[in-house]
Length: 455
Image (tube, rainbow, N blue to C red; front, side, top):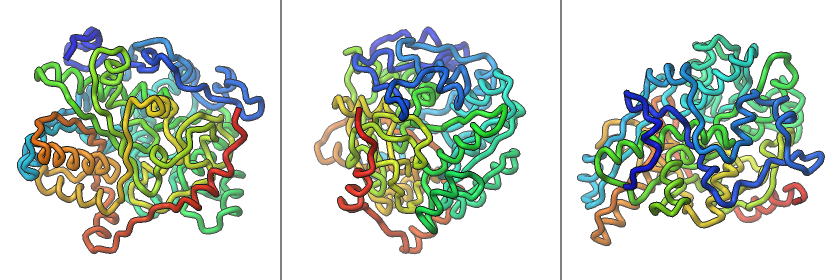
């Protein structure tokens, strides 16, 4: 593995001292966010009505390769970082594969997931700006939990709109948020104008991340001293999550090894983008090559069946337009148990990389995902989150391919968090009552028909 400048930014305790911005190394940059009223790129002033000032600067920066991590954020990170890179010896043995399997485990904090990496950064910048509080959405609840923790640490009010099906499926995740002081509302709700409109248009809906985003943005822009923060999709979030990949890269360098295949689950893109960041940087600069695989649910297949087009980032159409692989802002996926992977679109950065053929994507059904989760739990001793288990499914499949082909490859996947708040899902799988839902071409075409006019 090439000795690259990332090590320059390692602190004495091997914690990265700067985030890596892989957009700086992209020859073709992600398409800009557009103001839907003017169809022109959004300005910093327009974004600052919704987001924190410093986060807007990071969102629009596609030239700075490294952005220093503030000391206060580093101090918080030291409570749970560096996170472990673990070799899955027992899984390798169970599969009888010649492949080496490693996973980067992000579940070793109270929020139970990688989401805390960006939550603490966004809460810090909100506090530094002198805000009263922030609003957000959450799917399965990992992001809401992480943000409620970060807001409690920095003394900020935290208002969370939680996708209704997850609000009902995961009451304990909801109660963790409330324990940290967050106000949690099932979405779509009757609290906001956009929530009332969505309920009227889709009576009895189980909600979606697109719905919850619309409500959270409305709540932020209608309250003095509040801003909206997001746990995935945006460039700023992928930037903060690059700490996952930077630590992984440093650990592999220390081991004298390199991964051949890098796998991450993909909903909006935060975990995948963070895990692959420095490796993709090498690939973009022509210094190394890796197979990079995004794994998404077959029930919400943005990469594998979506359109690469400008679309609203939210169902209520209050957010800017983003060019991304999308199923359409009006698409409401089935109430699958991978709540964090139910977003209708994908990160603009990852979408551009995928469109250039720099990474692969595959969609998997949830019964197959939970079978992989069960196998992993029984041999490796960690109960994985449903989202993470999509990456486990692909890692197992790749390891079995190596076995069939007699190839000894090194596989790295992101274990984004634990599944101890997902026992309703595990119960349904264990009872044999879990089913797979895959949207039909007709259903997707109905959603594509509502895409906005393209610039």
